[in-house]
Every structure is written in C-alpha cells, then in structure tokens.
Length: 132
Image (tube, rainbow, N blue to C red; front, side, top):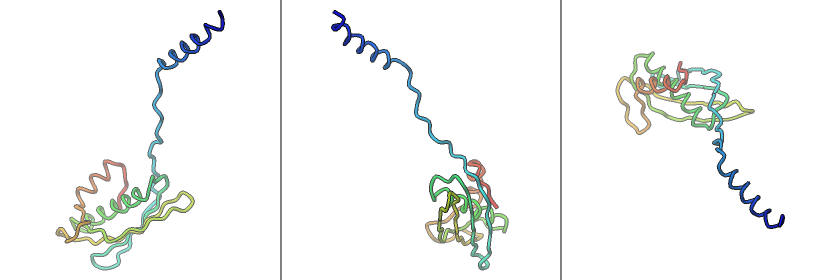
C-alpha cells in the first residue's frame, strides 16, 4: 500500500512546488563609471573626443559618452549642431576607450549622422551621462 502512495506524494509535492511564487531572474544593473574625457580641436570645426569608462555593456555605451561630450562642446562653442565622422572603441582589461571625431556647426550640417546639440545634452543629463 505504501508503494501506491509514493506516486501520489511525489505528484503532490511537485504540484505544491509549482504554486510557490517564483522570483524573476535578476538583471545586472547598469552602473557605468565615467573615467574621463579629453577634447582636442583638430580644425576650426573638427574636434576629437577621447573618452574612457568602466562598466560599459557594449561599445555603444562608449560611443554615446563621446556623443554627449560632442554635443556639450558644440553648445559651449556657440554651435547648435554636430555631425559624427567616426568612432573607434576598444576594451582593455575592463576599461573601455573611445576615440571619436565630430564636426560642429551653427546650422544643421548635411549628412545622416547629425545631432541637435541641445536635444542630445538634455538626453545625456536624463541618462546620467556626463558631458564636457
């Protein structure tokens, strides 16, 4: 008789286990550390931004940090817009670095990779990304 109860007990225990609330898997919280940035004026409207950070999820986080720096730089210099030329990203030992070049201009430049500096700076502030 005990043998006949065993499947029932196992099934009952499994059913109870299914009723217990399951905790959702935890996601790692994004907590970047922005190490710093350097700005180099290459020409009247051509600027190089070197950025470093820890905790980036991908190279896109590094590129966004450089974009924020470029937008603030444009505003500081009295320009309202910038155009992305290129960004190179590297990760060595958990320290991400970015080398980005932007042109800055008072009017919306031609091209598909343009940014409105005021809009981008506001977005960066909302996301907690530092600027120049």
